[in-house]
Length: 328
Image (cartoon, rainbow, N blue to C red):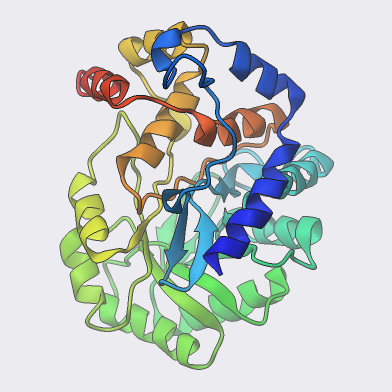
């Protein structure tokens, strides 16, 4: 199953734009070359570390796409250029993405609707992961709601918007402090038993919370804020790596806060990269369970992000990068 996916993914990756390929290939900085003949950006990765099996039976490319930024300002309403959002989603799949992350709270509803509009009927192997349990009173406002009855409604509505019979990965968007997590997860377990969802994930949780959740239902993924300059959840990542749980860092390139590091900025620039490409490459290097989901509404930025998985860096260079990152 994984081998078939790799073959198809490598065929798709041939669609990398000439602009990005040429810029990457001509980028200066021999220090990032692996041997004298190897380019900074190599061909599509073909080793086992380039994919991860969610729940051990759903193989995905480790560099996915986050669909939050395809909505309007404040993650509210429709995007100003709906046609462009459709193009971004289609191009992501052309570039080899087969994991798209969204949530009913993005818009709300609009991100899921855009995905279905752009990609349904879905290509074989495409995993659309979504989330529920976060309500939206207004732009940039988020209020958790983990009541079982609410989550059951969320699942049914997401299935309808995404035009799916089963959601491969459904995540509890936030743990509601007013509702025992066991109750919230009970609703997801019930939906799983009914065949509405395949695997269950969590978001913004500690190792202890993941451990507790696993007493109720198997946990396939965890989605926490994490990037090269923000490692608050290192302990959760360590737990996920030990237990072979997928770790999906949101804000993998900093989100609205960006990634502030003069040292990393200089290193990236000196080697013909953006700090965002460097940050994504670092995440892919960080652990084989890490599944970055960078989001953008820009076709150009999408191409740049996807090129990050082709970066080849020596072990010595990674030591340098880690040293610079530790200074942030």
